Image 1 (cartoon, rainbow, N blue to C red):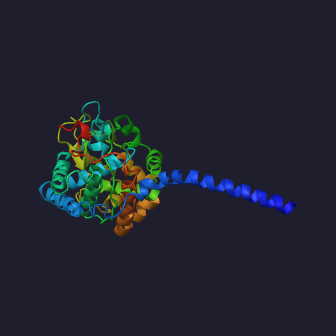
Image 2: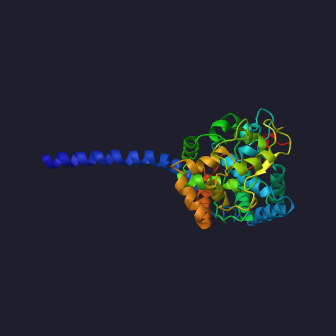
Length: 338
């Protein structure tokens, strides 16, 4: 009798487990689908020359306008940092869509017009095949190489979103004067740890910063964490406490190697020559300072950690499969094309 009861219980368990697995399987597949649909050489069959075309256009643009390489890296931060790597950043204000480019966080961003140059070259080769989201990712990858950074093997297969997230930009992207705990929390929410965050901020080793984002460290009194000689240099670049946002008033992130993605950024932080408040906080916060010291001492270590963090960022919550669309013009969702 006991044997029969035990057998019955096992049968009931087996009968229950089978339909449970059947019900859970679609949920598990749905959970993992976003990552699994990204793959290396996604366009190998549909557009074999896609990655080479992007690389060539990035190279041509860099040779004509060197600052485009910096723009591609910043585009990746601003697109993938807001909900998804879905090219929502590239959408312009039109027919009910409010562009993320209008956010204060997007101040100083430029060269969006050259995304069209890349997209047009791809459309000639393979119409309606390569997404704007993959252009954002791969142009950043190739731009990093142009800036002397590491070559990163990126997966592709991202799809383009149909909406903008202007109202979420302010909370999704760190600001230059945010606390370090806030910055770390923001990146951790998309799977990037403390060392990865320190490495990502190494992107500040290239490009420039407008005086609008600097003067609070100079006026009415100089931030005591700034090296005095460096503060005088910055005052020379930003001579008034109320600079015109439209004027060409800026300071280079790195005066020694301003267009090379290297660890001079971290060396300068240890010398109290961080340009932005968030930069200098990296060197003073006990959670991040050990990583600053390690990256300052070893450029290879910095580039390795930077590559890993960029890869994580580039795969943040992508649209894949039949989600979203492939935009014909990166500025507009397809039904709004003129």
